[in-house]
Length: 426
Image 1 (cartoon, rainbow, N blue to C red):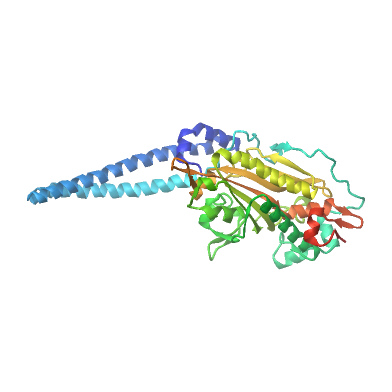
Image 2: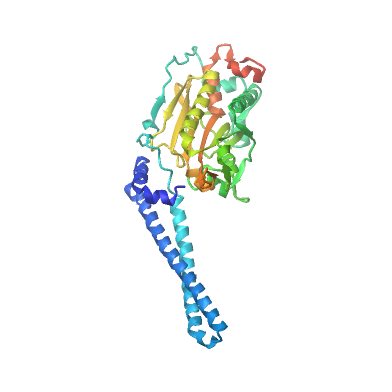
């Protein structure tokens, strides 16, 4: 959530950022509405403070009169107390309503984009930050897409998963399950080597946690809601891991705080049809290893690029062709100041599939979380939060199956063999 002082001091910059996100001029007017509401809040608060000061003054005056034996002279003062109390009660009600209206508007405004984020309306306008320069995989005649390979080698059963839960809930079995487990172990081990503390978080969060990291109200329609308990199935481990620091003040010397965690993730993706969402291309349940950092504002962009390098190294080790995109304003998420997406090439489908997003949220999440650090002067400051997928498994598995298939089976990446106990799916 943006801070009020930033909106007041940088209103035009924030409006320009919203325009880069393709907000209409009418919608951008919310910034002026927030400033006006905040001015009303200040005026009401001043009136309320004056009422309380007057009540204190009158109380002292009444007390002094009684001490002087002049209690009979307090009648008018007592009448004034009644009037001021009524005024204060009205101001308190008005202040509460104004604060609620202000909060509702504030929570609906996305993060301010970093100045380097390119303009654009959709994913077609994203910039290629780093292109793949080597040859793309060339497959043999009769090569299959991963959903047909899954059926051929009996490693993923989409039909049985749909029978048990519904479309978008694949069932892994045999060597498919072992590939899934191997990737999870490998990704976590790489995180541990890079200094990330491993976390096993809850798979459900309450409403406050979802609001704190920006999933609510922005992604309410994409989250599975357990209505009876008012809990949400997590769309990413970012949510529970980042919420470990809600309402906390951390020591500046502890920064950066580096955390990683594996979880299943659950997303109610919008229904669409065709090959681009077939098989593992788009699912409602998938496994993912997340990396999260809590960082000093002066160092967060250096940290962002170190996180990008971490994901890049994993993909290099897996020998998967990838490219990195800098997302344009229209495609950057609600909470993010800047996001880089990784895409891996799917040889059998002849297309690039997104497998990771690495983002800097600056102070947007920490303001909602009330996550602060105490600086050298002893003053509390908001930390910066960052996260990235390292990595999401579904599409990684799809690309491994497709890119490394041969007429005699699917060759496994060398870095996974020690986890798998086999070199080929056949």
